[in-house]
Image (tube, rainbow, N blue to C red; front, side):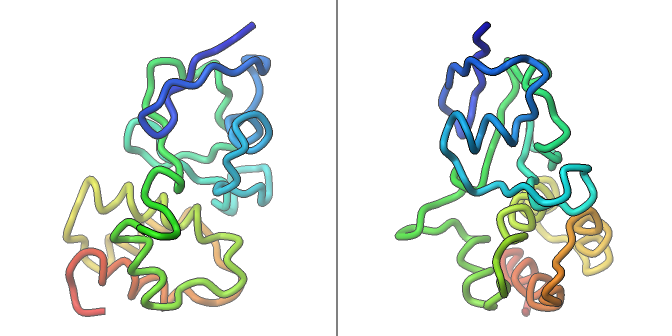
Length: 153
């Protein structure tokens, strides 16, 4: 069985079983390695992508739920040569230590900024609660999101 997914504005036909988690299809079939496998339980956020503008855990989202919906990954925000504004802010603030969680952090933060371009610190902290950084760069991540929102970092 094939399923057509819209990933970063482009229709992609995949042959995985409908109950396959999106994360496995992104990484294995589409060779998009931005989203990471973390806990596999929706508890760490390393796999976060956007579906219809909302942050979701791709490790828990079966592809059967996704036809006709817009999937956005960190690869859809920018490139190494031309990073998106939020990616650039993460780079400027040196918000990555080991970097494993960063794609998920960026995708969750982008969902917030898309819905609320000028969030308060409390709104940022509440929104980012579902993603973990085990390296302790949370304050740098907060500064990066402030910077991308046009606020003093």
